[in-house]
Image 1 (cartoon, helix red, strand yellow):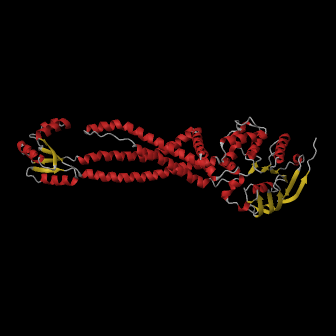
Image 2: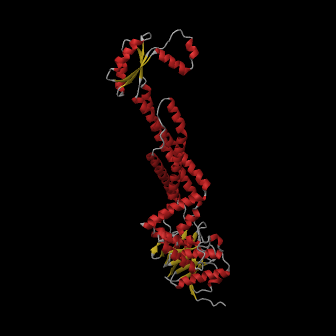
Image 3: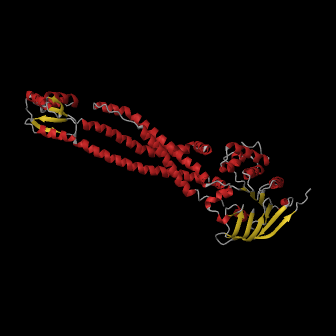
Length: 227
Length: 302
């Protein structure tokens, strides 16, 4: 589903963010991307979401080599990926409903289908009944859940999250991670960047550890029993 | 198809809503556009009115045949009848020197000064209205009447009408050039407004790109915004012209009446109003297209 082969990313100015990264996340897997800040986690996610293209090597997402996707094809490519941001990136002049509906409107679905899917997505993140609210009136945790609802509303097979719990307290963070684990159970492939090792110890799954632009470890973990 | 149509209706509605959200800023922009569009359109209406007015004059180019001073009134009368009999003359009026003096006294207010004169200095005059009105005939007729033994001179006043024609033609060209320049100006003003709007909404555009919005999807609301600005500006321009003409109609009619003319100021013709409104909307669309093609690409998620 997400395959990196000998990927290098050098930014203008010479900084090398990624140096020879290779891995393959299978369909239906849930993988955590860890490592100290500046290790290249964000760069890696940018390569997956086609915000950047690799300097060398290949990135294949959803069976498509991102280096071969022209500018015009980026939108269609992103329509098949759900992206969750640390800062939510909600549109604050629109209601919760309209925020979640955005990817569906882009897909050109009819109003009834949109309403149905938005409710389903909000139900999954536990925010049904907040549709008419303005995002600004919600707490940070709720706003993040709106962001997640938006990412899954179009039912993408791949969801990518960059520090989704970065601004949340431990309890809310756990809620969010459980939400992701639930999506994973229904077959969604997930790649979640986080530096919160304590949190992800509670979940099983793949762990990719980036240090200084290189993949230092790539292991599967069993969930740790937590009282 | 229905979905496509409803998407466009939605875009138009949301453009209107966006404009309504900042009424003062919107009103200022619309007013600038309206004035820029009203100026050439108003000039065009003015030129049209003067054209209609002067078209009336050319047809009825009466001219005066002044007889030699001292010609007897009976002779003048005979001459008038003789000229009236010509096939190229429609009508002849004799203004005797006494009538002319009385007229002049009544209209000029120089009564006292005229009393000081020993005798009437004014000649008998024949006011000739040519038949048909074609210009070549008029000049030939004038020459023929001027050659009559009792005629002193003929005052043919069509030259200035012809000059006015040419001036009006030139004015039409000038209005065309001014229209083109102000049209470009309107497109630029709207383009610039859209550019500011794009900058204000950079974060939103970035998010839309991240969730997979195509360029067309992102561009559409801005195009509608430009279209709406153009439409509103042109509508306001049509209103400005209509109001201005309504205010001028009464005085213009009064002036026309003083000259014994039944000329009435014509307003913006429906066709011209349609062209104005459609043109304004197209200019808005063009300005927005220019701005979006240049600036939307600059905003990419980082």
